[in-house]
Image 1: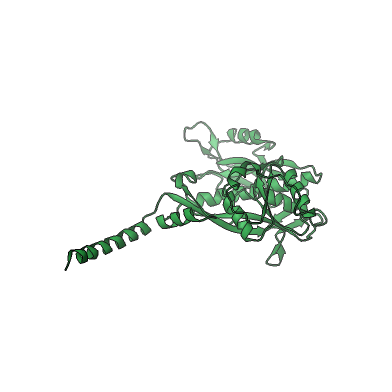
Image 2: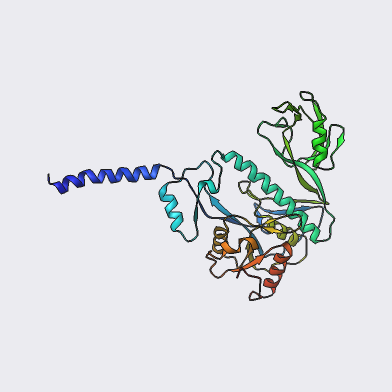
Length: 348
């Protein structure tokens, strides 16, 4: 056997082995790609995605698409080849793991928080839409989150409205803290809640804090709203997070007003929304723009704080409009509905 042949016999298996190791050993990166887009003005399984009970609703056509990002989860393994593919792609992205997740973060934690963020974003969206239409919306105190070893586990749920804790009427966060502090660890504490529109009486047995200083029920209070009627948004429960808030608020507003706000055009976007109607930044803007482009959208609403990153996205023929508030978004849509070549605020 010649030296060249011997070298080949030795090198080929080594190279194969290295490729196998590279494929199997995970690297500390997270990849992201364009996710699904959902027209929240449409229907699914024979039902409108936005369903309103207690007020007249209108379904007059056009599209308002919420956009998503498909990312590796906290406990997923990513190979060097997957990371390189995402890096080389024009529509995908790759980030260091610790820029996205904590070292000990779990998929379950993400799912719970993502669900809470989605519910909160829908409430904020409903409140913003109603206030835009002249309704007086009052805030209420709810169960925001439950700690991992919460005494309220299996009794309370995120989203429950807190009406009374012990003998104290709940008016704000402090009233909840004071009522729990006055309770006795180990003894049932009566709590009155409202869940899915129904008043319920429950009991939680407070635990003593680790330092023995006070009783705890393992609840972080949150804020929701007392609405004059009911809105239900039916989307895939696997979709979570707060970034669809802007599109939800626009879709609810359109559903509560006669005529098509979009003028029948295909509009997409993203952005959180707060109670004052301010649009907040989100992650994965380039992947969301790509997803909207692939879905055939004509206009994409970009949160003002995401403009710098949006500049690197491949939007094709789809126009990008910069929005910092609900009013900005509404004005951009109405102008585009009248004239697709209308001057719109842009990211530069």
